[in-house]
Length: 364
Ligand SMILES: [Fe+2]
Image (cartoon, rainbow, N blue to C red; front, side, top):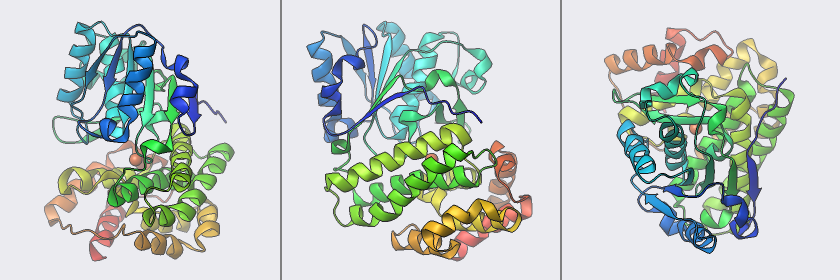
């Protein structure tokens, strides 16, 4: 068993100011954000005030959209190289953090294209990274992963120990402005990370411990947060749950629900967390048939796998309006079958079983 998580993770309210000198891991920063969220949450203002205090120059690249593309990270690479930035500060949800990680590698390796990121043998340096999440779901602040959308529309992740952030600041005050629907979809992304970690063939004693705590926190506090969005105490519980879930997938990776969900997000527009979580009970039921020990922790927390379904239903995960044709069903299923997620999912999934998963979520 190996446990490796080299990120220095600080959490708590106003944590940036209590450990501000540790944010200064270079001489010029590129701050990578989406268009609005870093501003609305107050995180950008806090970061800039720390940089100003230490007289650290920066450029701000704020054009990262949901599901970051090659174009977005290439532009960030150019900006970082032109301005001679030597560290990245990524602020936001998963998209800006994953884009920031990609830019960290590309800016250190000027000859590389985004396609080269997917083979870690292509590079052995990256700019150091500071990550500041403003949602609680992705866990990217503690993982060696980044997900990009390729020019053919497919979402693909890459993994490299070089993109574990050096320092991450987890402050629940940046999360209180999240809408109800964003809160739900990001929280069930974290829930998917922990549940997939438990089901994964790569699960360890330690990843199961982290996952169990994370699932319990989401089970107990997501319904509370949804009824009291600005409650900082509840937000803190979800923030911790999300980082714990990130630590889980840093060890185990994600499995089938993520691969199934990527197609729904790209082709049908359902947000990542929700598009993934809709498959959890059905994949878990299939896993139980061949590996009943794998679902024990879930049955303890939710009462049963039906209890997991009922929980997801109670937080509106099954409120969606999507449909797909037979041709799409074929295409999605074949893509999933070819993804690396299948081999780490117990349950002997073949093409027919994968089609069956898609059919199940259409019947709801
Ligand atoms: Fe995810």
